[in-house]
Image 1 (cartoon, helix red, strand yellow):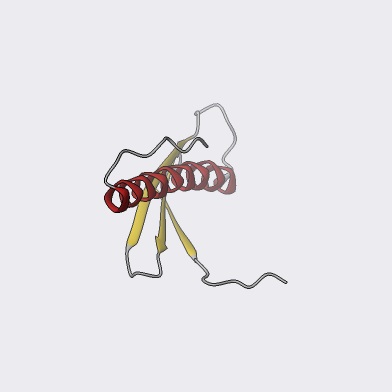
Image 2: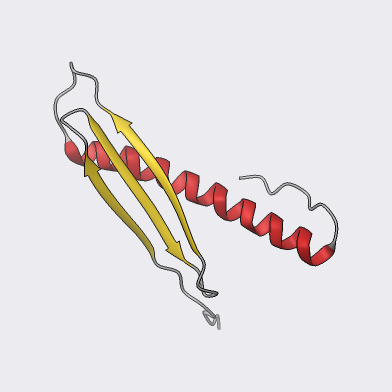
Length: 92
C-alpha cells in the first residue's frame, strides 16, 4: 500500500494582454515554504480564429514546462550542496 507523504498544489493564473496574446503564471509552494514561479506566453496569428482556451493551454503548458525546469535546477542545487560535488544532469 502506498502512502503519500506530501502533496503539492500547482496554481495557474492567466491573463489576456489583448486579442492575440495570453500570459500564464505557474506557482507551486513546497513543503519547506519555498515558492517556485514560472511564466509562459502564447501568441495567436491574426488569421487564426479567436480561441481563448487554446491560448491558455499553450501558455499554461509553457509555464508548467519552465516550472519543471526550475524544480530540476533547485533539486540539483540541493544535491550538490548536500554532497559537496556536482550532480549528474537529470534528463526530462
